[in-house]
Length: 303
Image 1 (cartoon, rainbow, N blue to C red):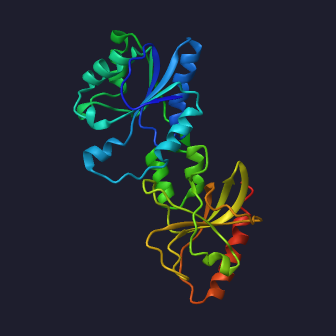
Image 2: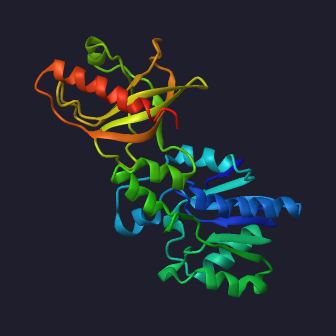
Image 3: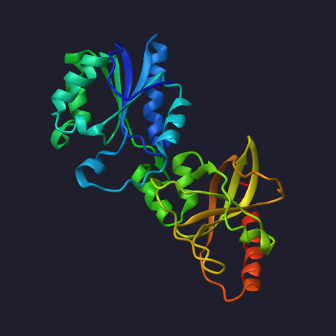
């Protein structure tokens, strides 16, 4: 997949519009539609998106994304997309819906097809919506696909619903809507090595600042190192018993694993929220609780 940060004229594209935070099952339906249409018609596919969510521009909000930008790129690439355009939203924020469609999408891509989710909108005052795109399809010669909402049970899958589930610690629902496990990737860094002194060594990674924050606590997790999968128990918190961290840490005790992995890439995928973080009065109490956490986690490591 070729990635561009600026507009480039590539005609006859089948394009998907949206921010696609999380690249969840609803997003996948939109993107896979344009990829399949492009393939069936001998054309190329593209995702047209922005580097940052428009809410940062309009409301000056700190981002709380489901995926980092690089992870979003990787997941979109796996769907077979040919081009991805990550544009600077402020450059387009004041365009009307007509201007964005005519002067950006049509002028640069001459789209043969446009695909969006059921609630997509664009342009000043959000005038550009699904009805707008359908209305202008004949004028500009593209086929418009409105992808209906995808559901998990009775609930519509959306980035908002997934963020709410993660904030509440409902990891199972979030993962089901995503179609994969929510996780954190990073380089293993040295901590204070207090876990090792307790008999439960941990691999520590830095939690990306832009990601949505999970509840502080203990989780059953899946750990991926060098293409191999292990299971573990992860504490996401401030270590209130043995130390106090300035920021939340991701510390994972990897089961049946004893290798030096400092400086190596690691991914921690969250499977289940076991309990909230709490302070213990003695180290022995903490050790007892860790053993109990390991027992609880073992039942979720079959997922």
